[in-house]
Image 1: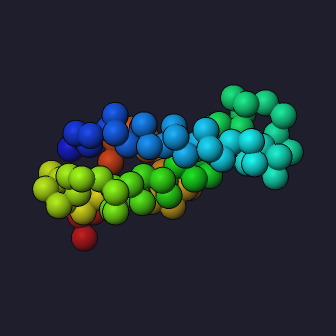
Image 2 (image 1 turned 90 degrees about the vertical axis):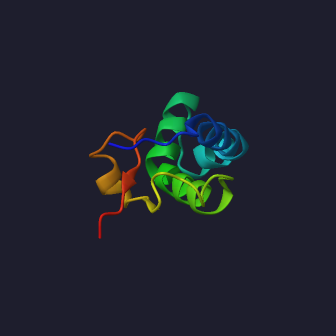
Length: 90
């Protein structure tokens, strides 16, 4: 299975986004705990952050060995290892 070669850059971007929006996310969802807030944020928006980063932000998206990186709906993404990107085999 092909894995992202720039995972650190992706995770750095995700951490930055989470830090920026965590307090508002916790408030809107009535979550008192930071750890649970982070978990909830990633479960709800992790797929979207990956799709945006890989599709529009990553400097290596044109030469990516994954070619067609896809992010799945959150229900499907929970079934797979979130650290591994899946190649669209259509």
